[in-house]
Structure formats: structure tokens, C-alpha cells
Length: 253
Image (cartoon, rainbow, N blue to C red; front, side):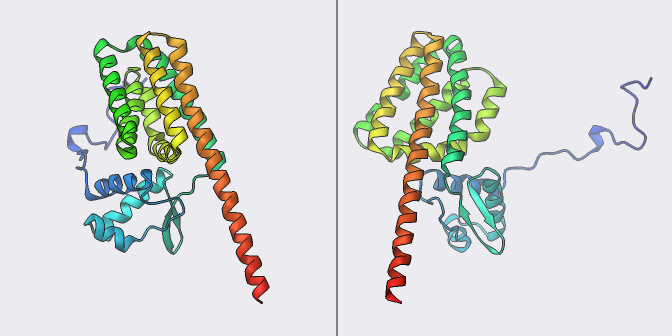
């Protein structure tokens, strides 16, 4: 039996190997900026990414920008095309539904755990977040509201005190954020979402495990339904417009 301490012939010791982590480079910073442009709708689904324009706007060369584009493609935010510029990934109804079904389950579990694990300070912080969301909503400041809204969802997951749950949630976060912002462009959904957040806060304050989980899970699924319905109706409208244009062209010939 070989001892676990025995060295493999020719294998270098850990100390002798170069394992130093590299520092965050320009491409990570570029990816973060580009990610925010996509999430907040400055770059819309289907829009072509112009490398020259972005390189100038971000103040970086093409090399780190292209590395950033690869990162965002891996996250599902960009689609790479052979010998053509990348485009912002389309929101597809079926994919949106599957994404929010998954995140709904994750955040439901997070709320159930958080209901028993949140401290008084945690609840105070969540209450402060809610107050700020109320203010931004009443003033019509969508982007500011959205930033706080995202912090609320991430904070509840943090308060579950479960590292695996948090890591799983983080992997899907960018795609979820983009769809959530898309949903809030509807004033009725924005109003509805704020009401739902009030109820979620109340359930967590009451330490009501079942209700907190049910409310947050339903809130996430509802957002997914709104996005999927909106995307489907817009796609149908685009198809109708395309058919009308083709018909008009045929009449002219």
C-alpha cells in the first residue's frame, strides 16, 4: 500500500511550482462594464457589438475587449458569430422560463433559511433597502430602484448562510439581472414587484419560514412569466412587421 505522503517520482513540491494568482486585468474590468451595459438595456437583445466603438468608449485595446467578450459569451449574455461581430444574446421565452424556474427554487430555499438565520441587524438592513426602493419608485428612478432591488435579492441569499447556495445563485445572476430589468420596464410590473417585496420583508421579519419561501419563489416566477410573455409578444409583432414588409415589396414588383 502506497503511503499518501509518498511523493510521485519527478513531481515538484507545491512550494517549487508557480501557482501565484494573476491580478485582475483590464479584460475583467471591461467585462464588468460591458455586462452592466447589457443588463441595463444600453445594449439591447440582438444588437451588434461594435468592437471599435466599445474599445474607444471603454479606453481599452481590442485584445482585452475580445477577452471580455469571451467571458460574457460564456455567461450567456453575448453570442459569438464566425467572421462576424458578436451580438447581445436574445431573450427567448423557453430559456427565460427555465432560468426563472431554477432561480425561483434557489431563492425560495434561501428565503426559508434566511427566515431562521437573519440577525436583527440583517433585518434592519433589509428594511433600509426597502425604504430606499420605495423612495426610488415614488420618484420614478428606475435604474436606482433596480440597483437596490438586485442588492435585496443577493442579500437574502447571503443571509441563508449557505456557501453552495450562494455560489449556484451567482452563476446565474447576470442573466437573471438582465431579465429582471427588462420586466421592470413595465410600470404595472414595477408597481406589483414593490408590493411583493413589502410582503417578503414582512414574512422574514415574522420569521415565517414557509411564507417567506413561498412569497419569494412566487415573486421570482412571476417576473419570469412577465419577461417570457413580453418577449413572445414582441417576437410575434416583429414577425408580423417582417411579413408586412415582404408583402409591400412584392406589391411593388
